[in-house]
Image (cartoon, rainbow, N blue to C red):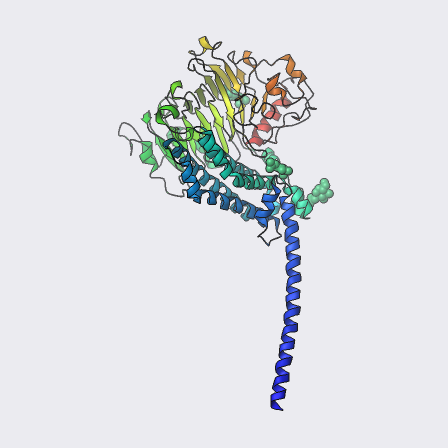
Length: 582
Ligand SMILES: *[C@@H]1O[C@H](CO)[C@@H](O)[C@H](O)[C@H]1NC(C)=O
Ligand SMILES: *[C@@H]1O[C@H](CO)[C@@H](O)[C@H](O)[C@H]1NC(C)=O
Ligand SMILES: *[C@@H]1O[C@H](CO)[C@@H](O)[C@H](O)[C@H]1NC(C)=O
């Protein structure tokens, strides 16, 4: 009897347990299914604005979140993981590393891919800190960093291409997925409003993916970019004598150090405070590397012709990639230079020879001189501001893919080597939605006295597209009689002819003449192929007035085909444009 009772009880317990288990499992499954389906809908929506949807969905499939912000962050993280995987794939990389020349390219890659990881991680962290409803405040910065990560990857490929096309192709294929993921991340940041609409998130539904405009316009930011802090603005405007430096460098022994490199060793790691180095008058033959950890460094000289940092490292004699030729290379964020000269004296024979490479975000160069020949000033990536500077050189002497504004600068073409032509700008925008582009505002473009006699044999051009979406605008600038009438030339036949974006507007001087033909401008293609010089885009053209890809700032709706009178309104508009760009 007792045994039977025990038996029945055991059976009952077993039955109840299995029923509970089944019910519970079914319930769980349903919950799981529902979760998966909301999450997969969210994945599809987040991937909707991306150009590589399969790559996107695959990268997000392991995420069970349906929160778009978390999905987007997962997308950023997937890019980091992929770049780390590339860096860790030592076997393939070693294969590319066979000869000395290529090894140097690989060193460039290791450095810049590390920058790409930093930029993506910064984007990941920043997005995490912000409530989606306030995302507009930081959107531009995230877009700039994601673009910077793409530029870095491209710099790696380009460094191989300098020597060996085959190795470059191989590197490109190794980075294919990383670039796709990176472009997708950028696409998501431009597609936020459509993502919000589809997922019914009203707080960001009407977000402007071209942010900061309203804020910038209402902000009194004086003459400097809004991202510059008040204390930094004060530093830039202060008399050199009234600034108390952390360290003094002097050739004559009157400072703590006699070299800038030695002084830089004093900058604390992960520095967050302005660290001011006064470099007294003198010529400093050094190779200066402001490493990425040395943030917030400011170098102040005694004047751009008195304090000069010089070197002659170049691609030809030094057997280095362009990236490593810089006399001064700035990888750190928030760098400021004031009253200093940067020089590369390799001459035209040295070919690519950079005087300054500015890679870290938010660089400011005030009253500085940049003297060189080919590739003098490498405005590599992210946001850079140059004001009251003098920039000299021969071929592509202002180049790179940063979002850079050059204001009140003197740009001087130097005498090149025999059979060489001179090109002022070689902008390197390559990807849709990336934020790079150069703006020259209120500058002068002229020829050095040695250049003037050869200007008809060694022609000078304003611009050529280094990459297919090269973007540059020249406004209210004095252009002397040294620029060939066609203004632009291709980098390689056909390259960027139909896709690059060059605009001239409100310029003056004999070199600023644009042809009557350009009034008939119909498409972007014609900028390079026929009229070449664009005084003003007709509203009906694909250019949409002065809307510059990546800048999203210039107003539309100008009267078609007529250069406008420089009325007050236009000056205001240009001022606004500059503000918004910054
Ligand atoms: C650029 O962004 C738009 C808007 O989000 C998107 O539709 C497009 O696919 C993006 N392009 C690329 C190449 O990622
Ligand atoms: C977004 O814009 C639409 C159309 O302009 C409007 O109907 C809607 O109320 C706006 N949503 C929010 C949250 O402002
Ligand atoms: C334009 O640049 C010159 C220096 O080259 C400067 O004196 C002038 O104030 C600038 N104009 C504006 C409107 O910034």
